[in-house]
Length: 389
Image (cartoon, rainbow, N blue to C red; front, side, top):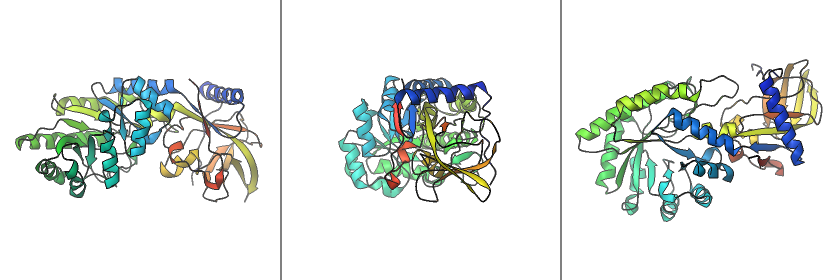
């Protein structure tokens, strides 16, 4: 496996990040791993995306990070939520959200999930097949549905999307019209269309393909006498981890042009970003708790791992920038988590300088798909979240 190169510690930006995280850690007198969360960074990310996609309403994807401080910051900035479960509904309403403003985007829901969401005041849901429509017939006067479609195959977008979300969900483009007609004939409200090209998109092309499909289908529906009021363009806007990406306004520019030129002016457009809003809002600090030399390779064991905050290494296929204040003899090493399971390897090959027990490593941009998928395997303590502003 190719070694993952960490950042240049001589760079002033990296040094400032490391020293700031270490100073905050020491000021809190914390033992064990800690995740420092910035609500101000959440606000900044929301404002950047709003500026990059003017006129597109933001529904923050709670699944990426459901910490109360993040949810409150979203509300304070005047935005809404994309939720996927009753528990997420309860968390955002506790933070101050109006259930009527929520969008339930999980295409497949249990009967109890549907009834629970409707009982709590949610009215807009996403579906992608006929069987799911039938579940809503008892609630035909209380719910409206968006039809989620997939744009392209997993193979076509493999190089452009880190996590392909069309693999598991989304109807074929040839099914869109019949599903819309079934919604209407069932007496259920038809809200519009939706797509989600994937998470951590490296290219805007999948969005453009999906918008073109939506444009064609909206026109076809108009011909059939059916008006579409809403288009959900999903999330997936990229974050800079270990690879450079364009600024969000540059990334979204072609998408903004497509939305302006291809869609009716009366159409309401929303997006459901998660990673872009929460990832860079949190920085993880871990400690070296052990080390060894195995088959001629240095191994370092830290107090957080893939069963904890680094769960994104497995579920999110994500690589994170690594900061240290050591700067000599950089060699391929193994970075392992604290559990007794051999799968708990953060990096099988990463360039690191010699480290001692008690040394600190800092990982920026650990705010998305980390704590939400962490466990307490081995009954080990999870990283403590510290809200710093």
